[in-house]
Amino acid sequence: MTSNDSTNAPSQPGHVRTVVVPAAGLGTRFLPATKTVPKELLPVVETPGIELIAKEAAAAGATRLAIITAPKKTGIMGHFDKHPELEETLAERGKTEQLDRVRAVDGLIDAVAVEQERPLGLGHAIGLSEQVLDDDEEAVAVLLPDDLVMPFGVLDKMIEVRKQYGGSVLCAFEVDPEDVSKYGVFDIEPSDDPDVKQVKAMVEKPDVEDAPSNFVATGRYLLDRQIFDALRSTKPGKGGEIQVTDAIESLIEQGHPVHIVVHHGARHDLGNPGGYIRACVDFALRDDTYGPSLHRWLNKRVAEENALDSFEETFQEN
Ligand code: G1P
Image (cartoon, rainbow, N blue to C red; front, top):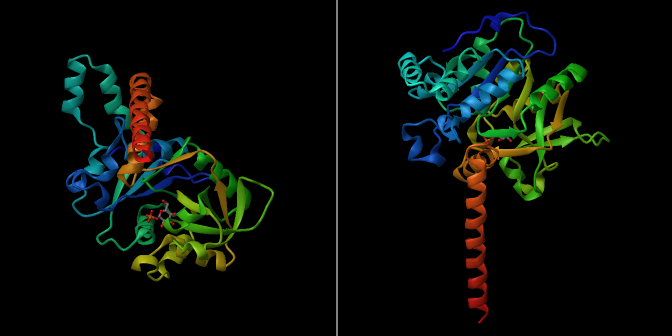
């Protein structure tokens, strides 16, 4: 665990001290890899997803990362521990680049574990983080580690929007209407601003025909502290789980302002192998070391695949 002296700096309006990372899931879609390796430690090129999240949180000014873990899912916290033997060996061998990579998390953020004993839902996981907050923290950010929202920086925009309107602010993407059932979906006030919209209601994973829009929640939440009271009185919802979407909806019903920041960049879903592979390719293509040769190889490989497709098409036609 790292420590950071600024953890207890006075809370200022518009400043987020704690970022909550729900990471108690079993990662069943990645079995057998996740039998022993937490999904959040799988590398995107060489950096584990949890470190990308820690960097994003620190860049937004947060000093505490509250990681919600499950019993026996201990490896994640170990990633934030010092590893003196490894560092010594790398230093002795003059491997400075690798040493820098190992030390990248030192002092980055104060990672603290909060155990979720039973998988009772995202809302329940977020609710548990209240115990690590200081009394003067007025808001908390939640970053879902399955969602990579690129380029980084959407949290800064969300903090600005909360400064302007108060309440809670969520990141939204516009998705194809047929995909809405995988997400929390917003009912929004029409407005001329393409980037910031007020939310009238929110519903978790509706059927396509019942969805109020195709603007969906994508793993970045800036929640007023009132969310914890709302979560306490939230009953199990979709999938029998306590849903943060339902708690946000109850805040809206009480007149609490909720806005979305519509993100126009890219998004990767690290929660399933298909999305994870795309994220790895995307990051690797941008990488100075791996990018150029991967690009050449991909072009060749895709050309082979296209040639095969057109051969099959011709064969079927005849
Ligand atoms: C969760 C939330 C959902 C949100 C989604 C974003 O669902 O419950 O509202 O849209 O994350 O990734 P999950 O993907 O955990 O089922």
